[in-house]
Length: 512
Image (cartoon, rainbow, N blue to C red; front, side, top):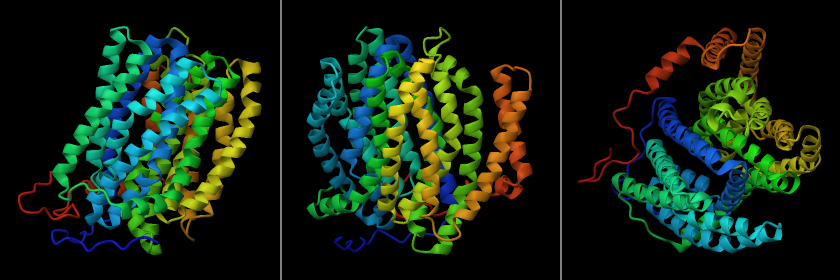
C-alpha cells in the first residue's frame, strides 16, 4: 500500500493550466536542442572510437556498453518513470523522491557490479572483457546519479535542465576520451574518461537542482519502499524493453566474428541517434499524459497533440534511413570501407523505424495509464520470439552475407509489428483510430518520397537529403498529415505564459 502524500508546504501552489500543447511544445523544443547537442557529440565520440580503436576494440566497447545499459535498468528499478509521474502529480515531494532515489541507485550500482562480472565470466568472455564490463558499470555511477535528477526536472516540465546535463556529460566525455586516445591510453583510458565525465554531469545536475527546487534532498525508508514497490511494474517494463539489446550483443559475440560485432555496434550507435526524436516527444508528452490519465476526454486531446508530430517524424526518419544509411556510415566512420557492412544493417533497421516511433508514443501512453504490467508481458513475449528468430537468422545471414548483424535487425522489424498491434489493445476506446489514420498518411508520404528518390538519377547526398525532406513535407501537406493551422499553433505554443512553473518562488529564490 502506498503511503499518503504529505500536505503541500505553504510555498507550493497548484499548477496553472497551460494553453493546450504549450507545455508539450516547449518541453519538446528543449529536448530537441539538448538531443541535437548530444547527437552531434555522440556521433563525434563514436567516430573517434571507431577510427582510432579499430573494429575489434570498437566491438568490445559496444559489448561492455550493453552490459552497463542493462545494469542501469536493474539499478533504476523503474524509478525514472515512477519518479517523474510522482513529481508531476505531487511536486512538493520532489526532494524526498530524488534523495531517496539517489541512495537506491548508489546501493544498486554497488550490488550489480559483481553479478555483471560473474555473468560475463559465465558467458565465456576473456579476462580483459570481464574486467572492462565491471569497471564500466562502476565508473558509470556518477552518470547514473546525474540522470536521476531528471526525475525532478522532467516532472516539473523543466526539460531544458535535463537536456543541459546530458549535453554537458557528452561534451566532457568527448573531450576526455579524445585526450585519452591522444595519449595512447586506448580503451581503458576511454572507460575512465566516461567516469570523469559523469562526475562533471553530477556536479552540474546538483547545482541546477539548487537553482529551481527549495526542497532539500532527504532519504525516507517509507518512500524507498514506495519506489521499490511502485517501480516494480515499471522496472519489469523497462527490463523487458531493454533486455533485447543485451541479448543481441551476447548472441552476436557468440555467433559471429568480432569484426561483425563491430559493424553492428557502429550501426547501433546511429540507430540510437535516429530514435532520439521519438524519445524526445515521448518524454515531453509523458508528464501531461500522466496528469490526464484519469480523464478520458483530456487524455484523447493530449494524445492528439503528440500523435501527428510523432508519425510525421517517424515517416521521414524511416525513408531517410533506408536511402542514406550507407552515406551516414561513410561520413561517420570513414571511407576506407572497414565499417561499410554496417550500412546494410542500418538500412534494414530503417524499414522498421516508423513502427518504433509509433510504439514509443503508444508505450508512453500505456505507462501513463498505469498499464505497465500488461506492456511488460507483451514485451517479454516479443523478446522470447525475437531471441528465437535471431538464433536462426544470425547464423543464416552470417553464412550467406558474412554479416550476421542483418539477422538481428530483421528479427527486430518483425517483432516491432507485433508490439504495435499489442499496444493498440491497451489504448482507451477512440484513441487508436487517429493514430492509424495519421500513420497511414505518413506511410503514403514516405512511400511516395522513396519512389521518387529511387526513380531519380544518382544525386549528391548534400542535394538528395534536403530534397527528401522537402518532398516528404509536401506530400504530408497534400495527404492532410500536416495542416496550416498546425504550423500557426506550433509557433504560438512557444510563446511563454506569464506563469509557467507549478512552483511559486519562495522569498529569495529565483527561478531561471
